[in-house]
Image 1 (cartoon, rainbow, N blue to C red):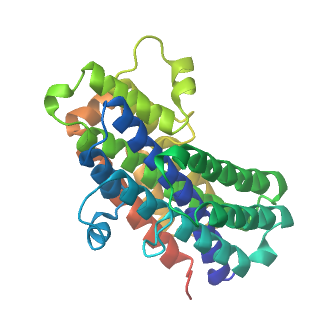
Image 2 (image 1 turned 60 degrees about the vertical axis):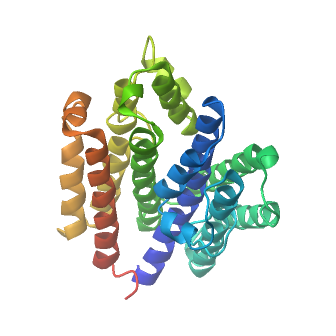
Length: 311
């Protein structure tokens, strides 16, 4: 496969996953702000920080109010990570690699672009934010369903899934980090009812609340939830699940060759295997998550280099 085609598939699904995860991140901020009894700037600043757009945001706005942060992350084309920018980029990549996609996948991407472009052409208010977030998630699911239901399990499929799981691993680490490092006001709140409520909000924002309850009896604790979202390979948004899939897809693509990206992915995956959550908390959850985000960035760059995406 040409590197340009491989890169188009990889980035198409990275952008689609990023658009969904940006919506989930906004939902997390909204839920936490509402459960806190009042909406203040700290929650929305933390969302911008986690999305990696804080500096760029401050070039346009002086304060982190709900309306500005929401619309900057959803519809501002000056923000390359906004949902509207991501869905535009995903469709552009899909057009470039259209002959590698089934008609169902292309149609699902094109429909997502048309629908979200219409929904995001006007500023989003608190009143319709939940509906917009729901629409973003539904369209992302439709594209994934079309991919799984109609595509051959070959190198095209592997590059699509690599894009999804690379982006998802990065965002799971970020959404956990925004809770534990940024959103919790003080160490005095750790273990409190406020702390536990915020952790439950994180579960709900990644559609994991019910599955967590199926597997865990009693109250949700920060440690049990972090264990679920980092180390549980049954959870499709956990770091362990994402890296197991990344290693599998890269192994198929690099069959017969020892590519640097395969070696790096295996090393990262090995650090998640055999660990327990007590060791991670002893190490420092924020430090662990910061390292995970850095590892994922390095892996994505190595994949791009090894498969000559722009060659």
